[in-house]
Length: 316
Image (cartoon, rainbow, N blue to C red; front, top):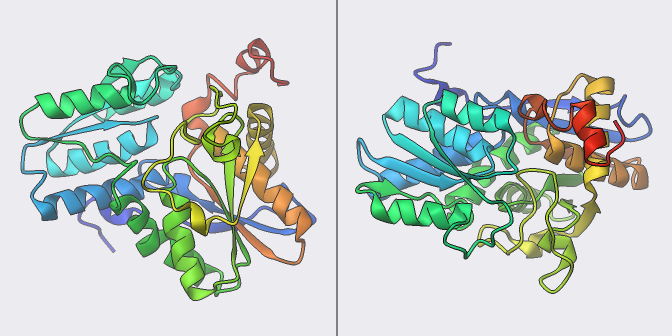
């Protein structure tokens, strides 16, 4: 079969048993790094742009402006390249150089902003994106934190894929929570088919989901997951449990996954599989499915660099 464009091969990623990473349970990972842009965010990129085109919010030759930790930007860059849109991404400065360079390789204009600024600050990566979208004629700001095409993409694709791939035998679904689109949309579909499925959100220590709005919300090294506010795209009611995971646990699990399973993922993937292994150990007879959201190739100078790990107090 020959596809018309790379957009047509997004999705239908495989499930792989993680029996060397966790020999005692029934744990499988969904390999989202095998999407053409290398992450689960390809799914929402095409969904949000499709919806904007249908609504007349993005016209031929227009500009896409989005704040991103990298992966959503890559997905939008792919759609922009195929459909002829200019793409501008604002990124916090904690985003790895590899991910910034990757965006530029696709022709994205990258604007780097301070990580520590709150979302409402005009110079944060959220604030700069809002300003650019308002200033540039014909610009569209997808806003993955609000856009309901984000969770809908997972309700329409990720959830049905997992249901079909497991023959409906899934008992627990685990995913990291950032915008909440992946976990909310996928869980909504899975629970529509099997209401007793347990949904577990993995969250970095310092994020609002486990700290709470009045808790110790602080910076962390893991990229692309967790939040310091509640996005409109997350459905907290559908998440049965959160597991807090430290940076050290995330990086250690990610490195272990590469060395035991040959699966290279980033810090958020390490966080997710660490949480999933905890659940699988508690429920060894249940089928636990975890989203492995992206590739580790964007983090070679960070969590896979022994010097960087030691410099930041992590055991290499």
